[in-house]
Image (tube, rainbow, N blue to C red; front, side, top):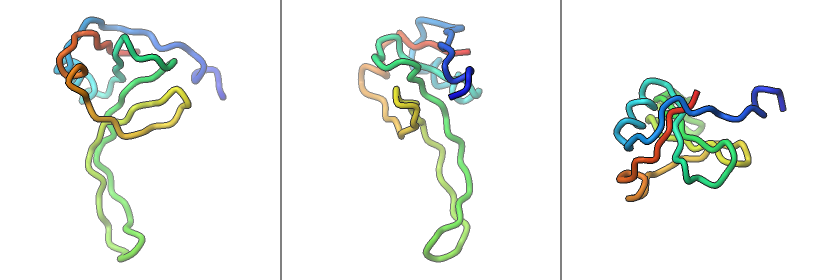
Length: 94
């Protein structure tokens, strides 16, 4: 692990609704909810990208998706809950 992976993330904007958090994601920022339990968990927008399909050899693409960085430092697809959409405790991270 390098030093930058061990740094704590700093919030540069707080008390945002999900709409503002989504705009920040689209602009390339990381976002998180204040109440998330895991250390250094956040969301990023994974942009659409091309992939070589293994079975038929054609170039396909992966659609854009929201990825959550887990406390174990992996990324998984993330889907918003009702409270994620309606609460105003989102932060934009530096």
